[in-house]
Image 1 (spheres, rainbow, N blue to C red):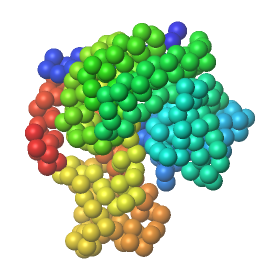
Image 2: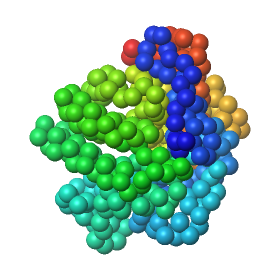
Image 3: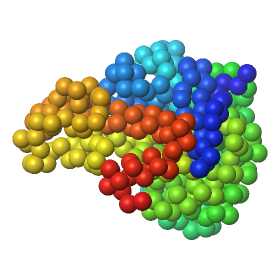
Length: 373
C-alpha cells in the first residue's frame, strides 16, 4: 500500500480541475486543498486545535529551519513532528531547497550538495539530497519533498537546464535514501524556469522515477502571473493524472482558482499569515488594510460574509486598535481570519467542481474581489 495516494472523485468537464481525496497516514484530505505553512513546527500565533477548527487537515513544515533549530535528532527523540507539535493531521515537509537557494551569496552549490551559512549565527552548514531526506525521515512527515535547485527568475536557458538536470540527479538520490516506506511518500519537483522545452524535459525525467506525487517548483518567484499560468498550461498535462499535483508557494485567491482550473490539487504559501501580521485581511471584496486610518471608527466585522471566530466576535475598529498597540491578539485574530478565508475559498472551489460551475464561480468571485477577468 502506498503511503499517500489520490482518489479522483470527479473531473470538471469545462476545465482541468479535479475533485479528490488525498489519502495519507494521518487522515484523508479533500482536494483541491490549501496547506497553511508552519515553517518552524508552528503556524505562527495559532494552536493546532485552532487550525483544525479553521478546517485545516494538512500543514507544511520546513526542513531547513528545523534542521538548524531545534535539530532533527531532538524531533526524532520526541517521536517525530506530529507528537512534538501536537498535530494530528498530515504534514508535508519542504526539503529546504528553496530556503537554501534564497541565501544567495551565503551558499555554494556543488554536485554533492549545498554549503551555506546559517541565517541564525553564520555557522557553516551543508545539505545534500541524502541529508535533506534523512532529516525528513527523522521529522516523520507524511510527504517528503526531494531536495531540488530552485532556479531564480529571470535566469538564462543554460542556467535553468543545468539546474533541472541537477534536480533530477538529486531526486534519484533522495529516492534511494528514503527507499520503500509505508509511512512516508516522496514527491518529485519539476523545474525548468519559464522555458517550455525545459519544463517538458524535467517532467519527463522526474515522472520516470515513478514517485507518489509531483510538485511544480520555480514559480511564484517574481515572474508575472500570466507567465506562471502559461507555464502551468503546458506543464500540468505532462504529470500523471492519477497522482497528486502540487503547486509550491502559491496562495493568493486568484492564483488558487487559476491553478485549480489548470489541474493543480495542492497549494501552500506564507502569504495569508504574513500579510495578516502586517495588518492586511483577505475579504470577499478584496484586500482590507486594517491598520489604515479609515478603519478606526468602523465597527463592522472584517468580512460580513465570513464565519470565522474573528468575524463573529470582533470589529475592524477593535482589531485595528490591537494592531496599532502591538498586541499579540491582533495578529492572532487576523491570522485566524485569513486562513479561514482561504479554507472557505477552497471549499467553495470544490463545491463548484462538484456542481460543474467552476468557470461561473471564477467570474463571480473575481468580480467581487476586484480582479479583472
